[in-house]
Image 1 (cartoon, rainbow, N blue to C red):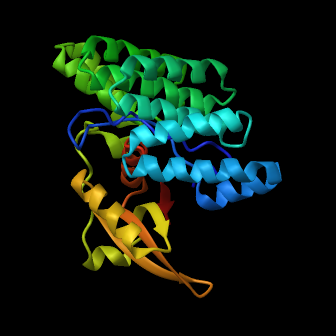
Image 2: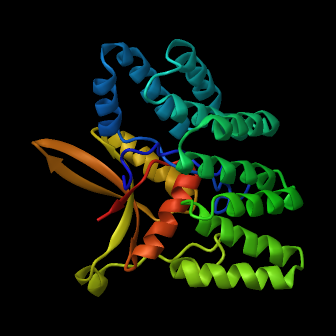
Length: 286
């Protein structure tokens, strides 16, 4: 991941919207290597909670949100101060949102924002809170919440998606001057995202393009090919250009799951942000 020390939070909540827009959550989950390193640093007492964390991650990505919520509660009951506690609280809030319990999700998200010492996490949580209103169809509340996120966290990682959504909402509400303002700021500060967030940048094909630097977004790495195929299927059903890439590392076969082939880093970063907002752990390649 780009920021191994940071909590890669799951993001912008996949509530009942369309497959393209459904969730603009946040952040990221730690990679397996990062999780193991954190457990070793914390000592032997972290091992039971590590198993719970892995189980929570797997249940969330398999969309078993009820079981994921129960696992999160169990983790927080036995290890409230363990290395991944903030990440688990965030995952739990996302589960509540996806289970249609928006009010509980917002309360949980606000609690995380109030207690966290991480500016990155607070910014991501604020954007997720806005998304709960958006997904519920309360466009006025969503617009106010996105504006508040932009005001309080002007340098957060979710700023391009917040600006993009503000551009769309301003257009829907007939706020011509604000639409122009947000669209121009988006184009100026994030040229790779100078289109609405609901319009995905088109991945590049094979051929001559491969002779240039090509970026993609890695979403998973599995020793079991069946798990990789299952994730590819879910990503494709959500509208992503997902594919597999097999590698051998230290004599061990690894099945990577990746999305897109982009000539520009900004386009790849935009797709990575959308994947994170749909609740996936990501890594930019190369």
